[in-house]
Length: 355
Image (cartoon, rainbow, N blue to C red; front, side, top):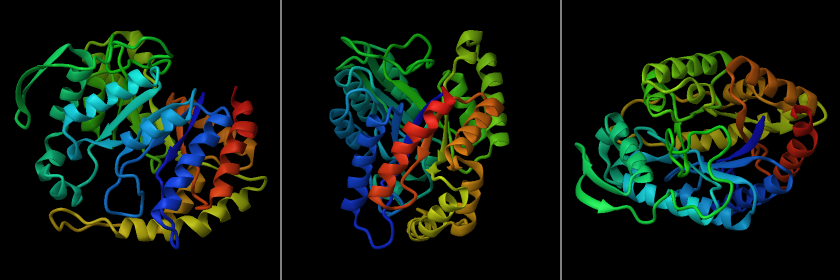
């Protein structure tokens, strides 16, 4: 069981972005000190839901501040980036960190980001497979040419090569790195639909599954991934060894009611202001979740409560889904001191119950 944190750099009401980013940095340092496995960083633009616009930039800072912990993006939104530029950054972070970087990629949403960065709605609706393929080519091959519908360019040399790691831990244990036999950084795909599940499975890439999903839905997605991976011809050991990541929320307290109360008091205000700030690129209607009901749903799904309850929920998810890697949102209180204590208790009180 590998327990990590999921860092949104959430800006709660009454806070500024600098406070949210400081909490993100400090919670990562606390995660390393507490013996946790990893930190996963989100990317958002133009909204206080999360004030980190470049997960790779923040990852570079945090890799420099730490020595052991794995740092990944959850996710870098591919329609906002040129795939080659993102893959170059991934290779750079992989090589300079001794193999501690994981690149998580996703489609994002139909937000105004697509207009600002020039990707357009087509990049969101149709361009994700081509972009993923170009990222993987760059991380696997010595020379790459763009021959797709969106990206066309002459063959160029890959510099630096992701397989030139001198020393270090290399890919996360139990992963296929950038693909079968690839020695570069681990690549993870955020999956929210059967289409993206099959895309990830076709390349034997592990999935990142959202915190709104329950165990039954995650188990179904893992089963679909395994079927699609076998159909793509991947060997049984690769299919069985895929290290998917389950996102969730964690709030540790001696009393379950107190843990839930902490989140129900703080998270709805953040969710309301953060989610309401999202603007669609084409004016399509959005149905937003009720912030209080959503917070209560998360508290019921994830490790929110005393250490034994938290450990039991994580173990139950692992048993039902086969997923043993977790990225847990720990900043739900909105408070720096409380976040650091939450991380400390995850490492000191919950982790020993799972090993």
